[in-house]
Structures are given as C-alpha cells and as structure tokens.
Length: 257
Image (cartoon, rainbow, N blue to C red):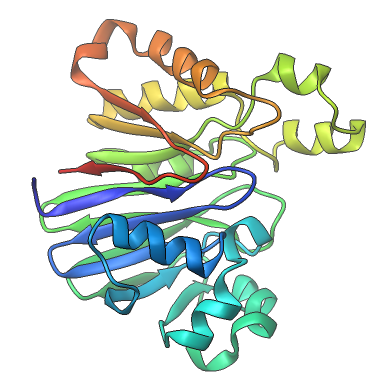
C-alpha cells in the first residue's frame, strides 16, 4: 500500500463525501451524509475524525453539506470553499470554521496542495479540486452539467480521478421524475450522463490517468452496471492500463497509490 488514498466514503443522491489522504494528512471533500456515517466510514479505513485536517466543499447542495452542522459542533475542522458556498452554509456551521476563497484558489493543508477550478452546476460557486501529493496529482469533479475546458485542464494528468457518471438518459426520460427536474438534470448546469462521463474518462485516460472512479450515480436513473459499461466500452482499446471502479451509496470505495 502506498502513501496516497483517494476515493468515496459515500456517493449518490443521498450523500457524497470523498477522502483524500497523503501520509499523515487527511482531508474530506464534501460532507453530505450524517456525521455518524462519516465517522463509521473513516473508522473502517483506520482514520479518526480528529485526524481530518480540513473539509473542502464543492458546492452548497444538501447532499454535499448535510453533515456540517453536527460535524462542526463536535470537531473544529476548517471548512474551505468559495465565498458563495461559505455564505450558503454559514447558518449550518458558523463563520468561525469557514475559510472563504475566490472560486479559483490554492491552499496547502499539511502535505497536500489543493487547487480549485470552477464547474458548471446550478449552485453558485461550485468547484472541482486537484490535489498535489508529493510528485502525484489526483482530483475530483462531479455535479457537472458539461465538461468544460477548465475542468479538463483541472484534472488532466491526474494519476487518479473521481468523476461523475450520474444517469442513463433512457432511464431518466422514462423514469418517475417530473419534466422540469429531468430538464434540470439534462441541462448544461445539471449532471453528466453515462455517455458524457465515459467521454471524459477517455480524455483523462489519454492524459495519463490510470485510476478512474465513477461517482454520483443516481439510484433512480442509473445502475452501477450501466455506468461501468459505458466507460468500459469507451476505454476498451486501453482497458488493460486503466483501473476502473464504481462508487457505492454507503460503502467506502478507495484507490491506494
């Protein structure tokens, strides 16, 4: 096992939380499930909540922030995010732990260097993150209406990346969601389909990424098998070079580098 750990503690419509660890520094990206669950998930991989040096938020939607009120009442963990996101979550965690930034910012936490980049989602101040861990870069970009050149640049060359494969378009269109919600998901400020996620996976693989995790998979409009299959096909001619994983709604799924 190497010095680097990255992956989801939980991912999907009911909550999202990603762990990035390098040597003795551990951070969370988002905290969208209960504090009880996050503590249990951390414990399962040998990390105490007190060992989390910071939480970085991608955006303010509740499936990425719902644990903050309870978490910050127990642990004085600094919360880093764009100014718009900090303003949106301040009522839940208090200004004393918030570290507001411009939408594109850089921060060093222990041995991890963090750089944000803007994402197109229907939430003000939404971002993805690139982490430099020694000589290695890893990253996360979910909740994307579409993949912009900025997002591509943000994750290009990462050894490992957590990316979105939210929905199967056919399942979404035939599913129970009302028309306005379907259009929101399909919009340029919504979520990536399996096909769009697979196209992004292919781009990253060509940039040097060798470990790809498909995340934020809808439990209503997708299946892990469909998400996996789309990226598997897109990567077919270089598949032996790529480790492809699928996140779980309530089970940690991690890469060790």
